[in-house]
Image 1: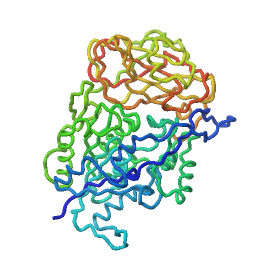
Image 2: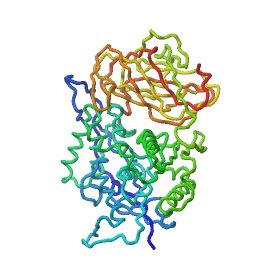
Image 3: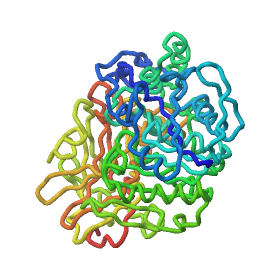
Image 4: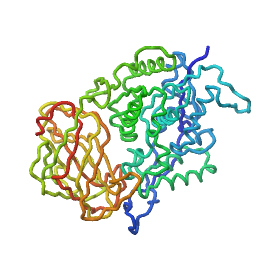
Length: 522
């Protein structure tokens, strides 16, 4: 009997090499400024074990918690080592076209469009499969399905990307700023390739090319990153996409899932998302039975062609802060509307934040950058010269935020380069703060991702900061806060302290997508 296939490609089966990350304690790039270098120094931080955990196995014995479940339901399970890893030939390129083609070739083989040979050189035919294929995985193992689906390859009927990347630029950069994945400060495409590769001598030149083309100097978008942007080819996707992502995933940030979801929706691709409250993890560890039931129904519909109606059900399943689960017809919540909140004076301590203007049109407040200070501690501090913080009054009822928060800031700088970081935080009645979301930008990329535009000290600029998409309920009695700072110790490059940022309160806003009324913030 011929059977459909669930296919898992990975660069992690052979484990990870111990490699050093790029140094991040360096000055920022400004055109023509002496000392604006590529920052080739190395940090002591190293690639961690989280990615290996995502692989779920080793070269000696690949294991996967889905295997037994899928085999029992009539699917074959196929494993493949990504190019340049394990026993695979070639070189890893951290999302490059060659990796995509390599992973796609397995689907071509499963559909008798490409030859294959065993270790002895004998031809091997996939004459046991129907040719209907699904790809599935977490992190890099979930990114490869996105990449292959974006080629429109025939035979790939469904994918399940979990905590996966849709644009590698947004994994290692943020609006022109060099920004790390959470927990991997100083990592970049070349570091990741070194971590997974097993063909050292053959791949040195290719990895050197990654180091040059990724451009840690300016952080600008270029052809290198465009090759790794699967959003550009969302109109080619034919596979039905069931994705899952952690609302607290700061490794592969929520933007990756949100923008992929939106691109698929705009192009009429069958789509569904699970948002959970954990970080960079698989929902099988959180809600095993219901998640497996959903995956099975997705595969039954798209690999077996059974009309079970799964595609007509709610497209968003969201875990709430109390661990309960809710459903929405789409995401962000269709009833969400944008609420502009305006800051008022006192940001060195805790200024105000409200819908109505506070008469602070001519007020400018100043912060001084210090990259050694952690953003969470700055947000929690009752006062600090290194950040500006503005809070609403206590909420009279729970307020749900669903979508992307954006800060529109009127800023001037006393130096030619600076990081800009904006955070949204939850201030509880007992004074504790919980970061909700944050975002970063390089003001030199205020006009375009692919072009650096110099900033002139003392001149005011409109700087937009789009924070990571979120779905969060602010409890009754809590206050919503905007925190503005410069460098973010855990994520951005860390220049010497002292850069001064001046915020014009009357010309600044934070726009929050809210479900329901915000009368109490007027």
